[in-house]
Length: 279
Ligand code: F3S
Image (cartoon, rainbow, N blue to C red; front, side, top):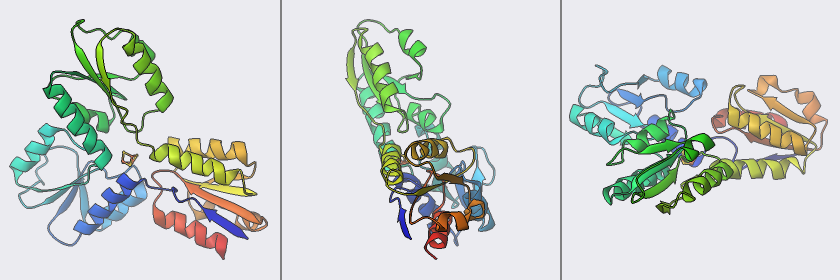
């Protein structure tokens, strides 16, 4: 049986890097992550067993001088960063470099006097953090209504950036609405293509196999999307959370099988499924 494992299955580059950075810290002084390092209970639980704790606020009394605090890939605002520095903790900055780039852009552009528009979800921690690097208040726009009702003085210069995981077509649509208002706009597409690459690789593999396995959490929206894409190409597409959910006998009756996984699926689960199919 031929088994094709997608190269882009599982964690994206930024999350992989952040998770590794936490594991690298284990063994010394207390280690904390500022917020859960990833939305995956198994990983957070494993880290907990190894002594890594999650802090949610700068006022947490466990943040004593010398403790290591890992910043997750979403990043944090400048205020939080400076507050951590004042506490004397050792900051291990695992902010994804693509997100860090947005922080630098908004900092410089707002300093030049541009009003920052962030296309994204106002409640998402990544957007919260980006706002926190702007020197002047930023505006977050997520919907067509919000883009329609955006108004600023006619002389205002704008700089538009995007949350890294925002949908590209929707970004274009919102930028178009804002552009029609006649402002001087600098638009920087800061969408990361990790999700898109994962989806297009999954589509390509699914189109060429007899059965496709999609691994990921039941509530993970990006895994659900992957499943939909694969199911469109391959009728025998299976959505599993772990190896236990897989009907191996059925899979082994196929001659050509593909595997992909959502963005928060840990590598060991992917490997386990891969190996079981190869056996
Ligand atoms: Fe991942 Fe960084 Fe892109 S965290 S989705 S590689 S912006």
